[in-house]
Image (cartoon, rainbow, N blue to C red):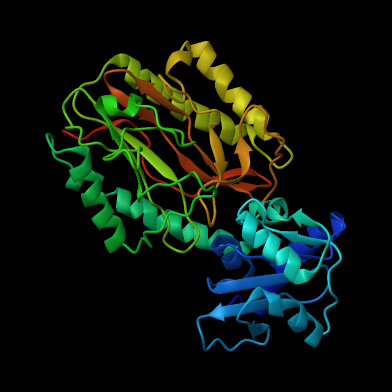
Length: 391
């Protein structure tokens, strides 16, 4: 098992410790897989302790055999205080835990193990730190974008008129996995779940879902009510492909829409507007630009075009048009009307202005972008037009 190299670990550690000190905290205990991967570069059973000053300590239960100067093996969290004392780290008086992710009983157990009166929520600290990527992280996302785009090149070769959306998705899952997709689709939030992405054909795109995704779909079973449902892919409908882009542990998010033969002009116009919104936001978004203002720009363009009824859903609408991407597919910043986020250089964001046309299907484009001092750099370079899969 490999951990981060010294320079990369130092960059991430310094960011986290700056936030920890700003909040007047003494330390942060990391416990979730996504955040353990962020602070260590590995996933293991255990914790990472980030003190306000000094090096991160990796407290490992499994697997055995890790050799690293900052790894200490423990059997249970009640040993952590003794471990800290043994390496000269003071007991924290103000301790932060991942309260957005920890079960209540585990949070209380950790509070007792550290013998502190109060615990504080460290989840926002981790989210803020992760929102601005290091050059190493950006390169991993860039590589995912290249491989993601290469997989999408085979969409037309696996599609056949009359196949079901399930059959198509299975073929695309095979393509992605053969191309090196890791399969796992990390999503923040206990009520968020998805398998390998979302394929929506025809009227199923208008089916509401309980999940906070941009698009819905009935799903194959009420235990996972999202995505493809066995719809036959017929002429006159559209097909939206929003599949897994996790090739490196850091993912890209990309949607492309296709038509199956001739579709109504309304669908063509809506898709064109999605591309126009992308182009407008590429011009507007810079470090310091407000995420809420980006949302408002898109909404204004939709209103001017008279397509409000179809934007970000028809029967049920999503309340955002974009989000951060990285280890998980829903990170900061969020492009939503009440978002307080402001773009920074190093943010990686997915922008997804989409439309649902009743009786036809979903249209629109989603790209993953890197926010730079000079604007947005697209990391998912694949044709955006509403191509005809019958040709």
